[in-house]
Image 1 (cartoon, rainbow, N blue to C red):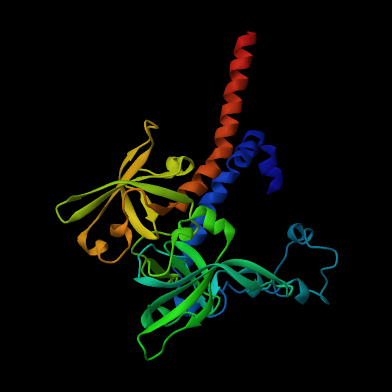
Image 2: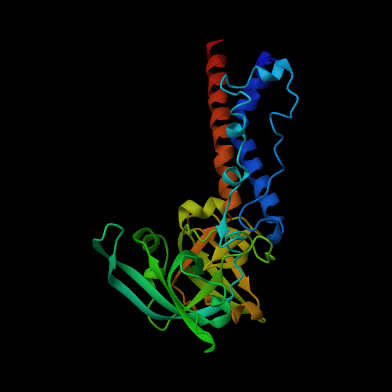
Amino acid sequence: NHTLIRGQGSWWRMMQSAAPLSGCILALACLHNLLLLPSDAAPSFIPCPPHPSPSSARLSPRHSRFLPSSFTSRNRRAHQPSPVRRHRCFLRRGQLTALFSGIVEEMGTVLSAEKDKEMTLWDGTSGRGVELTIEASEGTLEDCYVGCSMAVNGVCLTVTELDKGEGEGRGTFTVGVAPETLRRTNLDDVSAGNAVNLERSLPADGRCSGHFVQGHVDGTGVVLDRWSEGESLWLKIGPPAEVMPFIVEKGFIAVDGTSLTVCDVNRSHDPQPWFTLMLIAHTQQCVTLPTRDVGDRVNIEVDVMGKYVAQAAGALIDRVNALENKVKELEGQT
């Protein structure tokens, strides 16, 4: 009842102030429900509850006055919402996907890194760009296709060419790397013969043993130090200053596409902020991080949930600060 809500002025203003945060919570709830859907429940779209037919629904005079004037018995069918149009979401050939998990499937080998390849554009003209061709196992490429997503060192890239190498045990795939990707990541350092972390996009009904990784790298950090403790390997990494607020002790972080737990955090800028992480013996054998030397660049993606919450809460914080300043101003006048 809009009249009732609008009649409560303070309540209505509070709801407007909380809209950014409530929108974030709603988005997280939708994501949670999406990930719980079984794979056989949505072969091509997410099914929704059947909509009652307006012709059979009982509408009171109080509700019927909100219907458009054109809503007559002749064209009611045209006004029925389409479940396919309204509930379509992330699809990969009929299977729901949930981005990546940060659990590296294998280390592939870069066969070629063409830094100035001529490519045909949408209008028939040509442009030059970067293209990587990577060798991977037949198992990793089994359900891949041209146009699918593959995380390479934690960077979500589109497969443009594919040879599954069926029966040979190894295959190859090719990805294009955009200029913005080169600026944000360490893929510009990659050359033929280098090992790279590979992970296919994660099905929504698959087990997520890491955390939700978008494959949208925030920036590169630098390995500051490394040492061993028993069977574990420690790494100290200096991240970009702009992502430091989203790195928290014992929180998630993806480094070169590997889901890891932050151990220690130092926010001091003397000489620079850093965080540490630890790799157990098994992880050391499955990812490229142990091969990184001091001074090498690594891709960093912070937990996306933290960024969304910070953005949603930012609007409320700004309004609270403005209110506090106003109160101080009024106190000064008395």
